[in-house]
Amino acid sequence: MHQEIITRFNSLKEKQLSIDITRGKPDKDQLDLSNDLIDISIPTSSEDGIDLRNYGEPFGILEARRMGSELLHAPIDNILAGEQSSLLLTYQTVLSNFLFAEPTPWKDLKNPKFICPVPGFDRHFMMLEDFGIEAVPIPLKEDGIDLNAFEEVLKEEENLVGILCVPKHSNPSGEIYSDDNLQKMFEIGSNYSDKFLFLFDHAYLIHDFLPTPEQKPIWQIVSESDVEDQTVITTSFSKVTFGGGGISFMATSGHSLDLIKKVRTTMIICPDKLNQKRHVEFFKDVETVKSHMLKHAELVRPKFELAYSYLEKLPDECGTFSRPTGGYFITYSTSKPVASKVVELCKEMGVLITPAGSTFPKNYDPKDSVIRLAPTYVTKEELMDAMDVFTTSVEIAHFKVEV
Ligand SMILES: Cc1ncc(COP(=O)(O)O)c(C=O)c1O
Image (tube, rainbow, N blue to C red; front, side):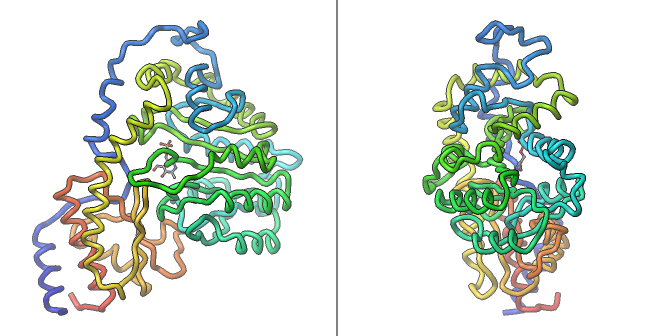
């Protein structure tokens, strides 16, 4: 058996591949779905007569905010329609609390900490590191965060200022938080402190490619739990229309809304209102956005299925893999602590994979097990080669094959 793996390794190496499956990006055919957006003709005024070409409307134009309100199921007064990046809104939220949170800005706390379900999104950890905020990992379960671990951490640690979650199609492992899990998170977190921030990066809100368990709109559970002022939800059209060319949205309330207003007033006079208008004209309403997402699903799903067809051939003893119903990632968990070795072997055969450990704070995966695969931003032929390389690497590392 080992000889067969060695032969495979050598022939893959000879192919001199150069394939990058590190990032979850839409492929060209997905971007083409929104081409009409590029030269769509738009009026120069918003619905309520604001000149779109000039400064003004720091919270976005009315019609874009209405779209955000329908997407996030929050009242329009609680919605900000921003620039193209939801990550920027998330960053600005942390920044605003860091500088101006009341009664104590986070910068004045001794060792402020944020709870981060793991595995998670590397940029979230990088962001917290920028502020010197410690990311305290808690495990994710199938239906959301491990509530017992959440409670334990809150009991044991001081100066916990919030939790940062991707509540649907979690990046990278694809979990969908149940309504019950969310409701209990709000109960436990708000009992700890009425300033504890529930920060939701809803990047994959409408990115299903298979039937997906229903999740109540988060803002509804937020309202029922009376935690509007300590919740911020962000999302964007980065994987709906164009990466870096969409609109971002935020839902929040009370002091959290005041804080984001304060910090944004200094740094940006207004978002790109013309692009907001272009998007509203292109889609008209949220129903059309959702049918547009079905077209993405048709292009994305076959790539996941293709990746599974390779992963299924791996012996069960090597590890397990996620089968998300949406989002952009598959997580492979090796049963032995060999994730770093697998990623290294892939690189040797010309396939770049997100570095092992990067789905954990400080790049430290205690089990050296979790590997994030992003199957979308490659052709089918490249994906087949990449998966061949990946599965071969898993076998080499698991069975300690000398190559
Ligand atoms: C969880 C998560 N949040 C945010 C982003 C980036 O979103 P945006 O382009 O809106 O900043 C990504 C993109 O990969 C993501 O996976």
